[in-house]
Amino acid sequence: MNSSLNLSFILRLGLCLVLSLVLNMSFNNNLKSCLSKGNYNLEVSVLYATDGSMQLLYDTGNDFNNGQKVMAKVQKGQNNLLFTFSLEDDGQLRHLRLDFGSNNNLMQVRVHSVQLSNNDKILFRLEEEEIAKRLGFLASVSKVDETAATFTLDTDVVPFDPYVVFDPINELMYPKWQRILLLICPWLVLFILPLFRWLGKLKKEGQYGLFFIGLFIAAIPLKIAWVTFTTLLLLAYAFFHFYKKRSVRLGPVHFSLMLFFAVPLLFLGGGDLSELTIPFGFVLFALIGALVDFSDRVNQIKKIYVGVFFVIMSISMVNWLLLMFYNGYFYKISWANYFIDIKSHAHTLMYWLYYPHTTFLSFFIIIGALFCLDLNSKKEISRIYGLIYALFTLCTLVLLGSRFALLLVISLPFLYAISVRNLSRWLVPAWVAIFAIIAYFIGALDVQREQLWKVTWAAFKNKIWLGHGTGTSSTVLPEHLSINKGGVEAFMEVNHSHNQFLTYLLENGLLGALLFLATFLFLFYQFIRQGNKTMLLVSFMILLLMTIESPFRTTTSLYVIAFLLSIFYTPSKSPI
Image (cartoon, helix red, strand yellow):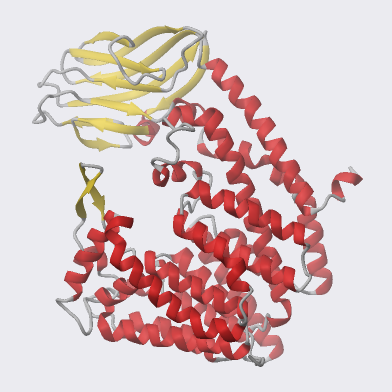
């Protein structure tokens, strides 16, 4: 017991990796055995409006086919149906599908319950309030009453073939929270005592601000509501600190954050006031940074940040291995095709996080890599610690599929080696050049963004100076865009421009976009005056992020950026 308490962070992390792999491999082997052989019974309680039929199709790796089908006749009214089938050792159950027949007079179907058992052992049971929530696909269904699991069939569809496909069988057997708990259990167990020791140390030293900072950083990959809540807790601590110290540290960076909020406020135009709730985060962190001086604790905060994302990356890497060896079977993901459609597969990989936005997660991870470079230069962490974080970062970014982030993290050590004086001269021109190259070659790099940027630019030209109003992207832009992807026409949902500068041009016009850019460059200049290499590079990375995404359209990314700019600002000047 004492030896486990004295483990270093890296060794503890490695032990968690091994334990999670062993635990989940054992669980998945048992699951595979349970779904690979035996006699199965699917009991369905269903209400039909007229006589008809129902078919069960089950998928064991070769998709749905007529060789794996069981049919039952259904009478008008309430029916309790039993579908029986058997699996041999070489098959493994993956999906279930219920077909409602082809009777055009059947307008509605209500499913009361669904239960699957194997050799008299119940694998799962869904009641009617759960059924509609556990469906992955529907066909010839025009309306669904989720509370009563009532399906209104679309009889105008030709051919009329209504059916529902349930979520993968592993998800039906084990809810998401159970699968997540099993995945992260070693981290919860092995890090709980060090966490309590750390909290005790903070209490002894009176460093309560670090506790609230830690809560905020830990909430970044979780629900947006948790990010907001921890920000409010941090703000409450800031006001309490101000009450005790009666000191305010307003600096140029805090005024810049206020101006970031002023842009959407002044150019609200036809936008709704509720659209200001997200950018109001700039004001919150301007207040936090002004009321509490964290300049003597920045290294501790960076260590907390790096530690949190170390854990996130390690869990993600374990989950990818499990996805390749076991769970990918249920989602048609394999070693061969993972990187072919990596955008969608990466979201499956990160299901255990409430905030699985791969681009923003990549950005947050790279910030941790930059902090490692800074901490290592100050001898605050060992070189081995930094190298392992770098290795984890490279692996995770490859798995998340962010090509741009991968190139950035590879170039980061070279950028950090450049002096502040030279960085101050070349970072902004480098960003302008990168922006121009991306804009010129966007058709070859990303056909979806190309179409979206064209539509945004056309809409911007209708209201050049003041824009359409804050938050109006979702109403001004079309709901869907038709794109040609690999020779196949596909539809992309649209709610923003995936480029923060185009978003400002569209919503706040040329004047709003120029005001924002001038404010950001002014902020950039403040970090040059401080000689703050880390924040210069953070600012550069934010500019790059805004080139390919709209980070100020979502709460988490905006709050993290505001946190970085506010908390790591120090008023002291250093010679260049």
